[in-house]
Image (tube, rainbow, N blue to C red; front, side, top):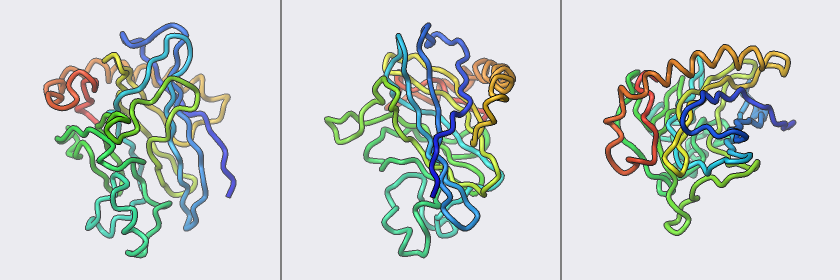
Length: 232
């Protein structure tokens, strides 16, 4: 199977978290997993002068059709906890859209988005998560360190030839944050500049709405996770 890295459009909206020279890079490795499906491995990296470790995510992936190997809803595969059961039920882990962590490695925020999706949940058209990383000393992966390597966060599986989108906010270890949004797979290189300009307006709109749901973050991630997007 051919595997290459596509640069996805990444939106930096000039929030207080932004630092000159720092960049947030979102990339995807596409793999043909058969059955007319393509898996995209999503990687997030913070690099450049003034870059900061990534501490938490509030993000939702969406598509017209998103592959889920959850036995008609009987098995929750939002995270990797039940990956060992998927083959026994006749499914394939490679064809499941999921975040690439066990819940024991994360600090989760519970609740419901404005669109009715649970903060950490999945469905036939979406994958949603709001979580921070448990430190390595506690058995977790710890924050994503600064550097081009970044960390694989999720695998999104959609019908080959179709697209998915993502939108949300990323929190850094100092409590600052940035909005992100984009398309999977990325547009052709000569179209990225135009799309970046178009998405800037979307990102600024998301920023204006962030305060509407700030109160729901009281809890284990207070001060670590940015105000979430209640309109996702």
